[in-house]
Image: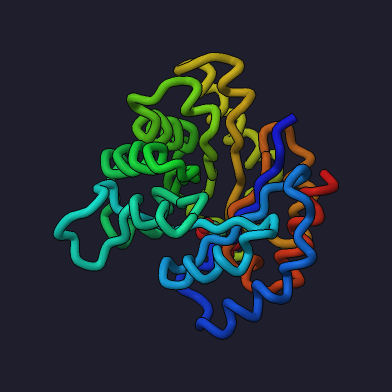
Length: 253
Ligand SMILES: O=C(CO)COP(=O)(O)O
């Protein structure tokens, strides 16, 4: 069985004091990482301190984006070398907000995945369709294209350790969740793409999260589904109580 992974994506929320208070509040309540991988993806600005604060705990941290070059004249960017040097374990890549507002392309995401692996950072690779694409019936085609592009050039062993997040764009921050069955169907289609590109074993190993208005009220049902191995959570990861409920649901799934 695949270990569930719950990743909070704080996006551009929380002041420094709020971030510290959150981590202090959840610190001794994180379920064991035998049962669930608990991750918080915070602004890069806070990551070194948060990582140090939690060095002994089962709470891991991720960045929300990074450049694919190790260093260089890229004003305002954060590199994989820098993230690795402060002990960051995960990075969210290709989030729909980055694709939409910062023109992130499939090619750039593919380079970022390579950079993450080269620095021992687990990539959480996001994909998902717009409402128009869903209504036009092209969801699986869109998501398959994004996944094939992101994974181009990697071998089965590398892919088996990646995390994929299926986030339908129309469900992000809207309160509209895909039904658990619809989410499972697309996560299953992603797994089928990986089986076709690599092998059935690789597809069985890779963890696929659902994201989009995940809350304590709907997490349990989502996690009963065969192909859903966790969640990438925005709004409901901002409050300690709701984040902990998500972790508990995953630890008991
Ligand atoms: O974009 C998301 C996580 O990356 C989902 O955000 P919400 O959980 O706020 O819908």
